[in-house]
Image (cartoon, rainbow, N blue to C red; front, side, top):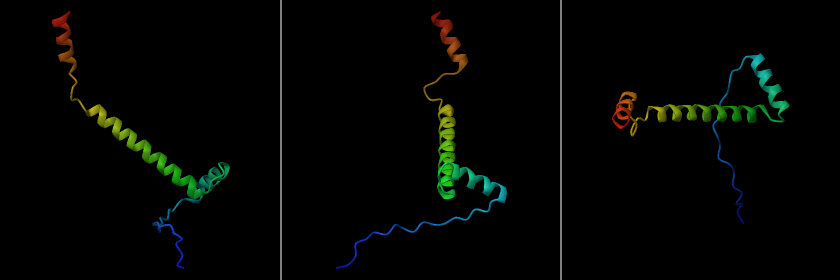
Length: 82
C-alpha cells in the first residue's frame, strides 16, 4: 500500500547578513521569550508588515474625501442655517 503522508511544501530560504552585535541581541531577546531566532524574526517581520499596512490604509482613508466638504463650505452652510 503506498504511503499517503503529506510532506510540507518547500519554502524558499532567505539569508540575512547581520552585524554580530545585532545578531547577538536578537538571539538573546528571542531566547528570553523562549523562541528561536527564526520564530522571533518571523513574528517581527509580520508585525512590521501589519503596521505598514495599517498606516497605508489609514493614510488612504484620510485621502478619501468623497462625501466630505471643505472647511469653507461647512462654514458657509453654518451661516445659511444659523
